[in-house]
Image (cartoon, rainbow, N blue to C red; front, side):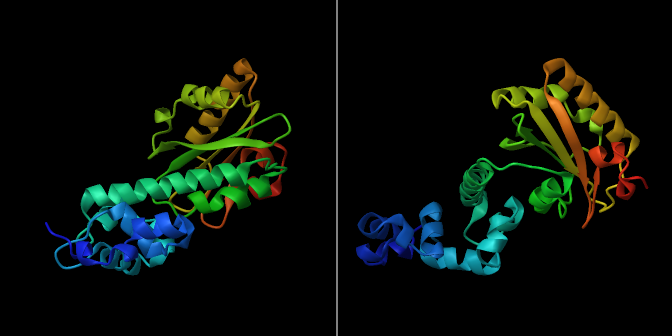
Length: 232
């Protein structure tokens, strides 16, 4: 398949521009074009990049895109889509590491406000672990499990294996209810106790388990201390 990208003046090609002027001087479409590498018979690689940005509602839509949606765009396919999503995920992880450096979580509300956007609009259950030191400073965050309607699929040993890699002394866990209702199930109570007990053995304290719903949440910490918001 021949791309018309080859007919572009050399100085206009994204790679050459990056080398000459610096990667930060490239537009969003040019950065995306580097990831795509080639275009199609109908469009050069920059035109394909612009099409993707238009169909995905610019970077905001691309940030939260799914493989099937991205791959369905003419000229993209699964290989290019995975390359783009891998770059996006790497950027997210770099951003998380920078943003979480020396962040201290002081209360339940702070935890909810910081992490709600990651969970409240998800259509699948996702389970996130936050690893902290003994001063409640975040050492790292990791998505541990996806699609956890059956809580027995969650392995506490995997959570604590990760916690030990961070040398964490405290732990906060969060998961979402796609229904939007954050009220805990019997399985949620059991899981919280199971992780709490495992933490005692390893000297890693479970501070809280938050269930994220739509514009609302449930905190086991608040519930146990008698917060009226969490008693229903």
